[in-house]
Image (cartoon, rainbow, N blue to C red; front, side, top):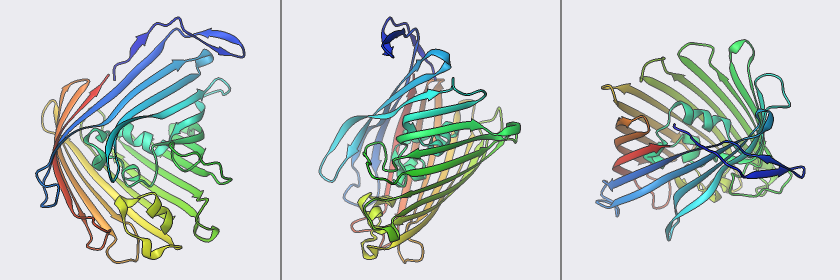
Length: 352
């Protein structure tokens, strides 16, 4: 990603003294989609042009190697009655390193969750739209970022990295003033030349659903194989969830699964994702992906699955295009009014 260096005479005041900003790193991403819906539903034959994501990032170097980082995201938001383009703060945190010796950092503000941040750094087909997002984000089990604090560090003997965070737990768009917070421990082992193993554990408590079933839990594991100097990659991700049924309904998790019959109970979900990417030419690659979710383990008709196939072409180092087709199958009693969905799309990703 190219970075523009903006020479600035602006200043910020810390402790009543002005500190000049000499370099601000500006980067971003613009994603564009053209979609045709396929299945014989009310949407069949409909075409749609979308901007699923528009990112604008500012990295502000501070003294002693500290950093202020702010990222804004513009995206189309769809409700039951309308669709609009909205801009929000995706990340806004102070990255504090000067108080430590070695590769350690303390972040506080609107911080990205370590699991999703690492996942998109490794493999980023997010520009295809929500269907190709990481499974915890697209099924709304987690938000990409949240208000809180995070500590990150390297493991000894170059084994990898780890992170510990405490956040509100309701996502960056919610203000959680209650006593309960959400804690996460992220481990990323990369001592091997071409393989990465990641583990993540999240535990929190919902404020409004009763102490007996208020627990929120995520257990995640991921294996990624990506040889150096090769476009080939493949990975497997597993996800285990526990939430109150009312939280799943209110948060519209798991593509709107209907669990109203289990109100007042805790729901166990289990899912996973597998993908492979391989090159077909100097600038072309094919991506195949399969996602599966059983949104209520032990209950009939609460499972769904999605398949995605894409061929992408790297037009230039900062422009990538793709043609993709996907299909999602739902169990017959998955949710009210929910039917199988399929679409083809042409997508473009522009990095700057």
